[in-house]
Image (cartoon, rainbow over all chains, first blue to last red):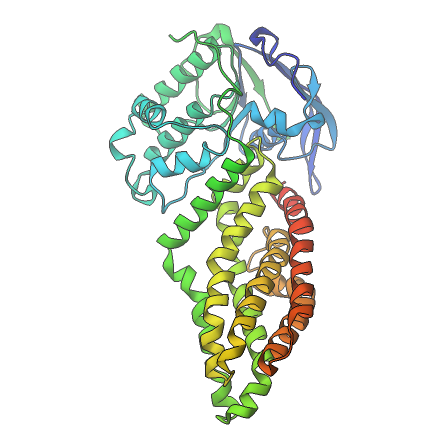
Length: 217
Length: 236
């Protein structure tokens, strides 16, 4: 199945309708609803345990809500999950990197499964993130912030229109946090969408950012 | 600021290339963590060496028990390696990324299982003749033993992949993995030991070998689907 809006950027839209999610006897998501259009970023806020990660995992299709629907470009994501995932880049709490592989090897195997990568592309994005100089070191020798930068290079290399980001600035220094804001802004300017669970303020224009506060009650 | 349009599908990786990457990655990782790679093989060698010490050094007696010894040791060795099949990938988020990759999860997990077989099943098939010789098996039977262990270990890897996927979310899953996998592996043990016994006697071992092949084909058809379903559930 081809999404009707795959070729036309302005119609890209992620919509959640009345999402209810239970984890055991805990009602984690209670009727969450929102819509994000191309060029917009939804910032999810809320205290610990409010369900930010659960919401992102539900939006990605990793978790099944007990009630409610998620649509991408007007189609329920359950109708063709594989096609939806081809349009999606998700970075969780921990960067999905193998400690015994170098940063470059990690990107080749992780992102390469989705799309063909060239060395030039990898160098460009690693350089963009300031990760080029240690890209041939095993990931186990990198600091948490350096690993996060490699993961963000992977995010750029995936070239997906929809970003779901769980605390993307964790472990980054001030300059790194600003860079995340710039990357999201550029992504939105290209017609992409982003949903980010993030505690502090993102350094992007207020015109393109919307907020969703989750309550932990 | 860049204004270029996001391309989503023009450079997509084919399913075959994606599987090749998963296979190559697992083999590379295993070669960098050699301890994990050698563990099942060392276990197989030690177990088969212990039997002559425990039973009798008499070759005729050892030859009689050789099929059972070889297959039980092979089964337990492959079980030892199964715990690692999906565990690291689940812990570091790689499995999540496989699910979200836009590729078929079934296909990617099949590639992982092939890598597992190449790293444990195939070396077991190569080591089996050495263990067989130490149990007094005649050299003429070695071809049949290699073939039986090679084909049987394919089935064991595939059956084991279901157990490994089902026990992903369980802490200290070793015992549960054994309880799930060993009963399903019984047909492989029966036909594998029968093929080995016939090869030792110099009789035709093709019928049980074909049945092992049939089990392997059944595993190829069903196990990756079951493993993918189990992985999805455990990631929820």
